[in-house]
Image (spheres, rainbow over the protein chains, first blue to last red):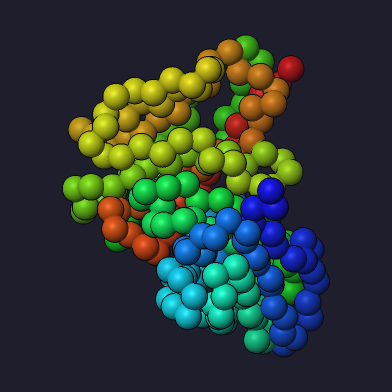
Length: 114
Length: 115
């Protein structure tokens, strides 16, 4: 079982460049999430989606965009990369709200903006 | 808004010692769910436990045990007879009932088990 797959695993961006972090899950989960983890900090929610076509902002959405055109995919877009976006990004999914079920996390994408 | 506090930034113990990781939370909701995740050096997040606010029974799973005390808003995690493989960052997290917007995480406790 693939679970939640994130690509790439590592990326270095120059300031002002853009990129898309890919996330796909094969568990037919409705809920998907993007978190960022800064050194010595817990994970903070960037965006989430409760189903295809529905997305909403989390705690730290500035500088990011998402889309959810299919159940499986939830890409995260950085339009104008800034050093403050240097972080480890985790995608997660759950069948329903995590009040009822476990959330599964991807392996993470380590992004450095220089 | 919710808040999860893990006051212990780093704990270092010698193998076979018992160790307790503290988690204190704040929420206005009467129904909520608490979690523990493990993040080994490889970086992935591994689910350990989910507990709802109505279930204050302690839980034991092998060498792991959890103590949930609503009166003190704490959900502590104890590893008995620690092993080197337990070395990791451990996160406590919370979500209120009906919360669709994901988990609120603490900053994590880095546990180092020395051989």
